[in-house]
Amino acid sequence: MPYKIRQAQTLSRENNLRLLETLFNVRNLQTPVTPISQTLTTPQSQPHLLRTKATRFLHSHSHSDNTTPPHVFLQNLLKFRRDKPAAEVERALDLCGFDLNDDLVLAVLRRHRTDWRPAYVFFNWVSKAVPTRNGYAPSSSVYNEIIDILGKMKRFEEVHQVLDEMTKREGLINEHVFGTLLRRFAGAHKVEEAVGIFRRREEFGLEVDLEAFRTLLMWLCRYKHVEDAETLFHSKVNELMCDRDIKTWNVILNGWCVLGNVHEAKRVWKDIVASRCKRDLFTYGIFIKALTNKGKLGTALRLFRGMWDGGCKPDVVICNCIIDALCFKKRIPEALEVFREMDERGCQPNTATYNSLIKYMCKIQRMEKVYELVNEMEWRKGSSLPSAVTYSYLLSSLKEPGEVPGVLERMERNGCTMNDDVYNLVLRLYMEWDDQGGVRKTWEEMERNGWGPDRRSYTIMVHGHCDKGRTKDASRYFREMILKGIVPEPRTEKLLNSMNIQLKERTGQKGTEGETTNL
Image (cartoon, rainbow, N blue to C red; front, side, top):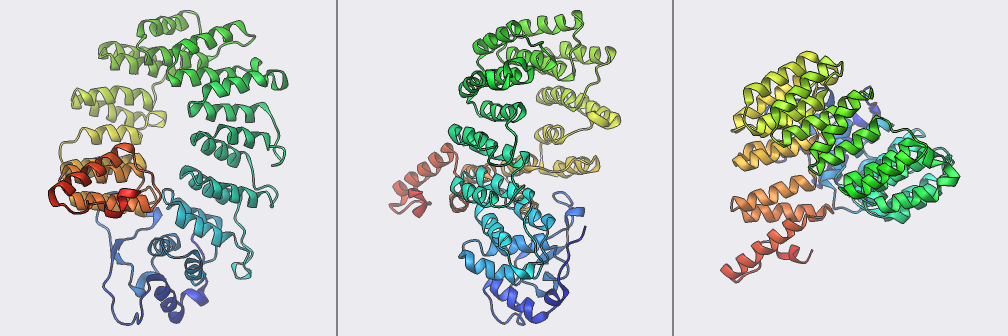
């Protein structure tokens, strides 16, 4: 649905001149300004990397109010005023004249997933009740998006401010928001805060039930707080009867298995057997996965065969686990036998099944078999259609930059969209090949489409430029990462410090980081 733009404002030359003067801090726009080239495309027809695109100019008045989608225009505004005071950015936003709605606001926020500051300034501007905005008030989805962005960047003071604002309006905090809060607090290892959010459910107008409790346990286990989760589980046995629910048992079992603690997983398995709960496919799948991860493939295979013989038919997830474990042990003929057996027994393979085989076939460079499997996936379609992971394996096996567009075009042709993992993989490949044209285009496209750059992207750029001897470029990306509030990986800080020391020894001057040494 196209965004509405108030004609009286957006078609006024004086207002647009005034807006662009505020936006880019320039005067006398009638005189041509040296343009900053950017590629702008609409979301409905976003081409992939290295495809021909029309070049636009951010400082060109001729397109700013007619051809640039509103969410892209607002993204550029926030980008070029990122370090300005919030009040100044809000004045520039006030001049835009766009009719606000959830689609537009969410599109802008999602383009700042890894840069919380402009997202938060924009959200605060949007959430202010102003008569000229036709009564627009952000929905629960908008609040959920900003909480997710702030939580991801560990800005919990701002998260609490948003949460306090939400409690003033009825119905804003729903199960989706609740799950996001738990995820971000647990992800930052703030266990008490996550438990506190659960205990406030009644205050939020939500029911305290077993499903909500299971969500809390799931996120605690997901971020390795399994012992805390199991303690909570046992503390709520009488209140929620969670010991009679196999789904809740599975969360605890899976937590220990993901943690790699097979000893504790066996203990929980025995507790489940001794309880009143009947094991389901998830219980078997979780335990088989733990066994294969620890290299106990023989025990896992006996349990797997026992399921067939005992009438408990393994599902595709369990079969995939066995196939992946056999491939890892380089027992590929046995993996292919299980693959064929699935079809014979009526268990249809899915994308993950093919991906396990393709992953290891790529490693041993059996590319003819790889593309035979990919063709079969495309022919089967449905649950077997290739995913971004499939194409990532194909990309990783490429030998030169010229092969990338072909894989990406095939990916687009099958309706598989780009994501941050694929962008970062392509970025890393171009950096390894030292194809700076490809690096630049990938960086610009992922930024334009709201998929980064994130910490992985900056790590690739810093380490890549260092490996190529371009220390100034490495330092520039490091500074930019710090200014965005992205915490570098320890190895990146160590690399930059080492680079500084070497330059100081050679030149007797300050290192490439300069002021960033103290960050």
